[in-house]
Structures are given as C-alpha cells and as structure tokens.
Length: 232
Ligand SMILES: Nc1ncnc2c1ncn2[C@@H]1O[C@H](COP(=O)(O)OS(=O)(=O)O)[C@@H](OP(=O)(O)O)[C@H]1O
View 1: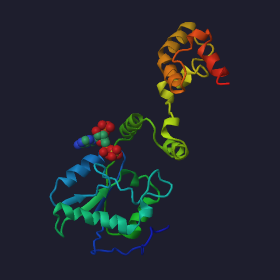
View 2 (view 1 turned 90 degrees about the vertical axis):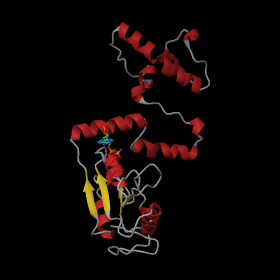
View 3 (view 1 turned 30 degrees about the horizontal axis):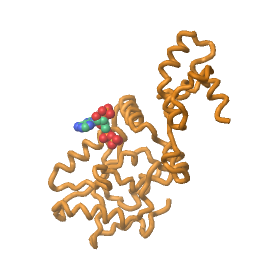
View 4 (view 1 turned 45 degrees about the vertical axis):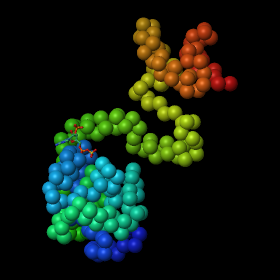
C-alpha cells in the first residue's frame, strides 16, 4: 500500500480548509449512483463533491491500475475539494460525500479508503448483473471508444495531431468494408452484394479522409483489390 503524497495514514486532518468525507458512494457502475447523488444533494445539509461539473466522481481512491485515478493529487487536494462545499452555505454539522462508482470493483480502493478514513460510511448500490452489464454496454457504445482503448489511443494522440488520427469502430463496419474479413469467401453472392452496398458509406469515409476520390468504381477493381494493392 502506498499512501498519497503528504499523508500520514490513519490520521484525519480536519479544519484549516480541509474536510474529511462523511460518506462514500462506492458503486456499482450503472447501479443508479447518479440518481442517489442527486437525491443526497437535494437535502440542504448534504454536499456532494463534483470535481468537474456536472460530474460527481473524484476517483480519488482508485488504484494505479485503474482507468483513472486522482490519488497522486494527494490528500490535501481531496480534502480541500470537500471543504470547498462550504460554498453551498453548509453548516459544520452538514455531511459531505462523494460518489465514484468504480471504487467497488477496484481492488486497491478499500484499503486506500480505510487507511485515510476508517470511520467513513460506505454506500453501495447493487443491481441485477445482467441489467447492469447491459446498461454498462450501452454507455460504452454511446461513448464509442472506451476502456483500455482510450489509454492506447492517448499514446498516439500525444505524438500525432488530432487531424492525423481517425478511429473506426469495428461494429460500424470498416472491416467488412475493407473486404479483408467478413463477408466470408463462401458467403452467398447476394449477401456479398448487400454487404458491399451497406458498407459503401464507410469506404467512402475512409477514402475521403485519406484525401482520395470518394469512389473507386472507375478503376474497375473490386474494393478488396484496391485496398490490398494501395497505397504504393
Ligand atoms: N432515479 C433514477 N434516475 C435516473 N436514472 C436512474 C434512476 N434509478 C436508476 N437509474 C438508472 O441507473 C443507471 C445509471 O446508473 P449510474 O448513475 O450509477 O451510472 S454511472 O455508473 O454513474 O455511469 C441507468 O440505467 P439504464 O437506464 O439501465 O442504463 C439509469 O436509468
């Protein structure tokens, strides 16, 4: 276990512009945590941490292997953020909390929480797993690119201008559009025709982005031939 910068584990600094959390909503992802956060915040004596409005989640306790963690910003940063909720006319008796729904599945989060705030209240909302997974899948689908892909793509974004980076989504059709994968060789001719027609807009997007003529029909070659032999 590695404490955040400037911290003495187990000690709860209070006052001096710093505030410890009274409760943490730890999950689960897609378990209705946003609704719970709003409901809590509706009470005049409860302040919910929002790191970047309208997002509640601080991800302070997430582990280093997590997709996103603010642990390295240090305990003082976290407690000053919580203390900042005083701006909402809160009294000393008010409660402050935060919700970061992936604390629940993060193996490092419980120890990080306990080491700093052993008396904090933990709130977990659970949801029927299939419905939860489906909701999560829907969210990822809307975001289009998620999970580790973001980390991988960020390495390219650091080096290349955004205009030089185009991301295609498999489920949107490019693999089939390129003619290298589905439809399988044994697919019915009518199926191949239909898929090529359906995927044509994706091909055109690719050609246009590469600065080429949107259509290659004039070459008399099949799309797959064109892709396989170019650019040279
Ligand atoms: N009262 C209320 N208001 C709004 N939304 C509600 C509420 N109760 C549950 N839900 C459903 O909870 C799902 C979102 O969960 P989370 O807020 O935890 O999502 S997140 O992890 O913060 O992204 C999301 O589920 P799905 O609709 O199945 O995707 C919400 O619809």
